Length: 370
Ligand SMILES: *Cc1c(COP(=O)(O)O)cnc(C)c1O
Image 1: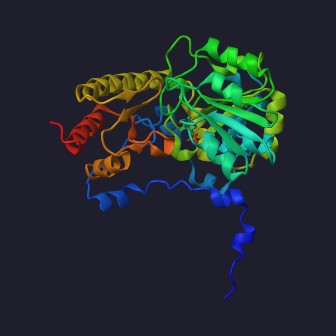
Image 2: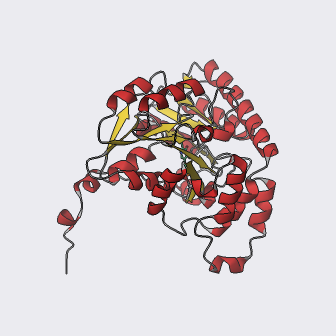
Image 3: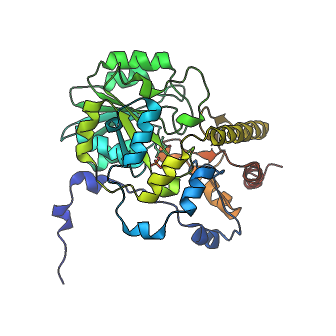
């Protein structure tokens, strides 16, 4: 019997890394928790589903095309996005979800001894990718539930390559307005790549919310992330993209894996654009859901934090993992926040009213408040 020399083979940063464990499939969970229904309120998915045009394209996808490699660089989608944003198509890189473009950027700019800066309580993938790639992630505490510009500027040193901003921030929903973002970019002054993750861009209605793409001319060190997973409800097909200055994107492109974005995702994404109606209906659903939850949770005396985006954070009087298990027995799945460094908070996706009511009923039951 041969044994693998794992101790010598595995780099120390991999030995240290604690892997993320995804949730089990619905059928398995229902059996495990003995529930007949399951509302997934854990991933900020859009309950309205894909746009009508995207549905048509998905339904009509010719099965023989499954045997053909897709466009290796999402050609038609990039050309359409470029037209919409007034950019050159080569300023856009499409990935297998925004998650994949995070890895592109880190691989393109970081080498041994380098670091990235982000917040301590934000989308965790920036930190994870940096760490399992062997780079230091400097996580700066949030201030008033938002990114702390001063705190982050202070952490910059010679080896800082990338600063990740999540605007609006998942999970708190707080955002930087245009003035604040510009002040920050002026002080960074091109010394680092500044990634602005706009995964929830289409949900934000505030006038002072900045569109990172419009800042590219002035600030060529900016890289903007967008995704089709949230507003456009294509999370299951895995497609997102980054936008940047031509020279910067030409560097990042060197780290892209061709064919990582499948053909169905590409055509469904292309068909999703231009549906303003879908965006308005989703925003309306989110608005109503937030109003309902805010009223109900405040009545229960629970502390909540939310802002832009289709999610809300709730502080519980019990442990978040216990609440998770209890809510699961009621057929409601939420996101525990201990992993986001918010112990005893949960994050709930804003869903259809029926699901919001089921969530409130279950929450009242498990906290035995009537
Ligand atoms: C959901 C999410 C993403 C990742 O989206 P995918 O395109 O599904 O990989 C990126 N950033 C933030 C802040 C998100 O919430």
